[in-house]
Length: 68
Image (tube, rainbow, N blue to C red; front, top):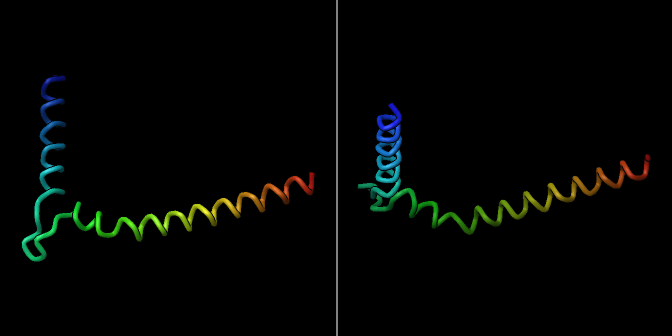
């Protein structure tokens, strides 16, 4: 039974990798290529999000410390 489970998981992973790496007929780009092109923008957005979250946490910590 375990062998059948591992075969099914392996087949699903292989299909997923094949799907992600397959080139799109319309644009001749794969999903990985699209993500690589968008990566710098996504990193900038994540940095801004992290900065905002850190500021909010710092403010709440200062408020909690002042009221304690």
